[in-house]
Image (cartoon, rainbow, N blue to C red; front, top):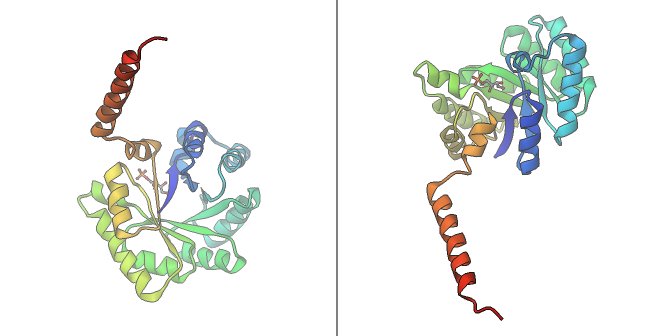
Amino acid sequence: MKFFIDTANLAQIKEAQDLGILDGVTTNPTLMAKEGITGEENVMAHYKAICDIVDDKVSAEVISTDYEGMIAEGEKLAAIDKKIVVKIPMIKDGIKALKYFSKKGIRTNCTLIFSAGQALLAAKAGATYVSPFVGRLDDISTDGTQLIEDIRIIFDNYGYETEILAASVRHPMHIISCAKIGADVMTGPLSAILALLKHPLTDSGLAQFLADHAKAADLVPAK
Ligand code: E4P
């Protein structure tokens, strides 16, 4: 399973990259705004700064909602760095834009997927990734991981190469559930990734090992 971090915060991206387990980054206009990044020049420079930290796969989202606008914006984003994946919303013109970028060999991430039908359309249009939003479905009492399962079945039935990028992941159990189903990628906050590390028996076991080691060292007669 590939691990993407869902943030535009450079320090957090660097922390995840330094762990050695990071495969990519997803951003969205909300996450960029959270970091106070506004204005085309600053936005472009920020994406470049992210690309300079990670090895590959930085999703940068278009703001336009019409076909021509998405193409123009997506091409500008793709020109920033080879690591950029153009993020396109799941709307009618978005499907056409996915097809356009797919033909040009520019990688895409179709965002705001909330149904299996939407994922199927994006795959047919040649999206590199589809991003079903697990957490936001859970927020409205709908089973987000069930959607991942449905998309997995459909993509496997037809051999679609489009990768399932489980998005809107909020906590470690989302990651585990999506991994069990076979999502290709998950994107979540650093907190959810780091939470995978934790187990109280690991902490108490390590404390015991260190205490026993120190005790044994005390018993060694001084020369
Ligand atoms: C996907 O790429 C989105 O950036 C993201 O996962 C949305 O997550 P949220 O629902 O926690 O805002």
